[in-house]
Length: 372
Length: 183
Image (cartoon, rainbow over all chains, first blue to last red; front, top):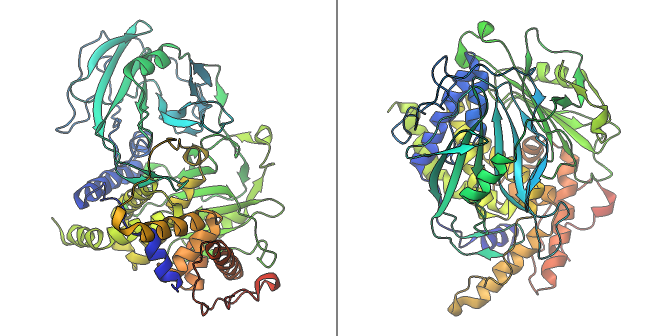
């Protein structure tokens, strides 16, 4: 008769070999630290793009450059190369207001580009799925990758060996990489066998003057990566839509002086691909001294599991050692988490910020308001 | 390589396997668990010298990341690849069957209850530490522990697997007050 610990040991036995090595983790940690430092010294937009592209997965590092050609930048390490081909300098594209979505949902055959959920001053991002919005048994929805639209003037890096193509009459670069999916058990507890190394493609194309977009494939357990033809067809069907301001579901009555929104993730709790809303605040670089001590504030709203009847309804739980406060939002099925990932802000400040929030109707995104 | 870097490297080498297991038990998907651990440790790296208890800190980050991942609808709807044979080894079929039954039972628990049980009984967190890690009240953690154990017992009983009867988890919730002593 096993005890609980033994039972859990049974469940976790026979895991697959690790996919990441210690060196992978340390390298990713260094990239993350560079991102944090860049964020703190004023390169917030570029850095946010770099880290959310995936800490460990092969992706496009974002290196905004001044002047130069119309081709994407090189990422500046041994695995990434110079621009594939020179392109005549184009005129600067019109700059939409910050935190304005230009991606609109669209479909190409069996593939769907969802409404964008993530936005920073540098980029906005939408998921790419295959399958119907309401998955049927035997015809499930598959997450295949993402479309990232960078603001004019920001140039994503292109991996070495990329092929030069044309998308909508403008230059495009198709890069190839590999990724192996090892043994695993899905959330449905079906054991999936190892895959052979999978080829994944990243398409970077110029969607307007001095403005670039990227479609990156992310293979899943079913080995469903987008083919080059699929990525090109999705890119060819892309058209910047009417500007739509990003919305957030609360107003902060109190924020420390000088703080501003630097990233938003989530535009609805009912989205197919994102189930929570996070708003990140940072301070201007000039006020950050020394940079390594600069904090950020992340406000996250998520849906609660059904709480037991004895659960305190609205009493905040704060951690002084880990710089977060959390509590159930009165009258809703949602929780609030206010945290400082740098662990430098006192919880009294986090609590004050959280308690100053005035919420819109969380279940009705139409009532949410644009970033001030 | 500076000393801090070396300490972090040793920490990862020593703890990564345990954190993978913790994340897997919280989410039921090895790939998601791998990503949750890798991303959490990458985020820990720049904070390494500021964190007084990295094991607890990493465990909290990993479990939260794993739960967040499986709550994303596209993660839940990953294709199951109908027709693929489950991996099995002929000479220990019984243990594999038991493992799959236990995994199946864990998978049927709500994510919150599963996370509480995993942190309590696998990571050896106290009730207060679980409450802090998951941003819940102590009462909620107690209730979710009791409910999770009760549900797990029922599910496992269907496969003739019985948990020991002396797991002591008090609860303030009268509905579950009688469930912690086993059945």
